Length: 313
Image (cartoon, rainbow, N blue to C red; front, side, top):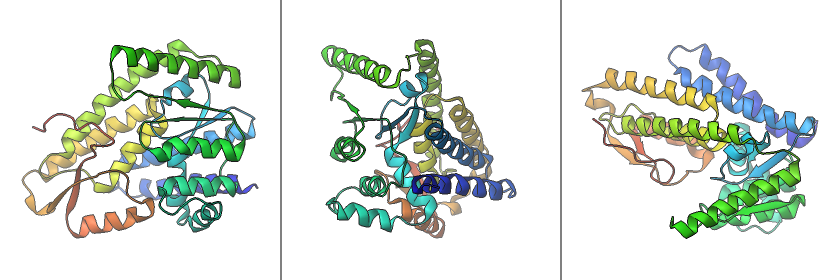
């Protein structure tokens, strides 16, 4: 079996194994099981697309993935796939070493170094196109160039303006229309505008659920497990507009409500309230969870990734 399939299969197998363990433990929230199932399904679809010669689009962070789903194009989120490779395989030293050998400096953000090493090691599937934006940082902007250079596949850079004037909104609209034309020409798949419209309506509902969850996070004491911010971020990046995300968020919200009511008035369960600024190193998530339990620390907001929402009542 090719090495790239081994890496992705490791993610799938790990998700399924942990899911079975969670199902057997009544103390584990059911939303955790659903989250792992969504991850397993996402990467199973990616492998199936490669085996069946489907069309795969690699995309960097904060790309509007709902466009790909509306065109029946299989997405591969580059940064999150690099993170999951590190998280579920337990190590990415070989990929970081390979990336360093290609000349990528150690100061570069680690997901892009893992991604670069994975591409040069053929540890991830090769995409048919690469799509990237300027929505987060210079690493993301150059990440698309790296993928194009290594795989030789065509790409499209979605240039997003810095503000929302009428002129800039018109510019972005044309950028998106040109992107869709590019994808139609390269993939042979046509945009299903009704499907896209339905997806956007679903995303509106999901945004409201995110805001409700963020409000619950700010309760005192907070019912939110500190490490779960990664789950919220992941489902939005990988599967925005998909029905299973709505199901997950609805379940997670209900579990937080129940936990809030259970903890009401118990000030002993909370000592520190933490704001997450950006994404911590994935391989340290276990350490973060350990320290959060040891020092009774709770995560109450992610201003860079999620709306702060409304004031908790």
